[in-house]
Image (tube, rainbow, N blue to C red; front, side, top):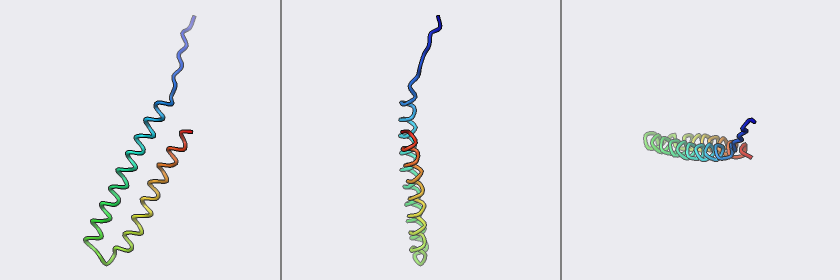
Length: 72
């Protein structure tokens, strides 16, 4: 008689979703920090830097939402 084992991969998916949320938080923090640093160095370009920062942060959050929604 074969012993059949089944694994529930839901726990692994939850761990992966949590790690992706941590990674997205670190990434957005890096984006904001570097944007603030570059705005301090070149205040005349702060408007363009801020726009690019918001676009980059939105893309990082979008990837996070895709990862979280792909779990379901």
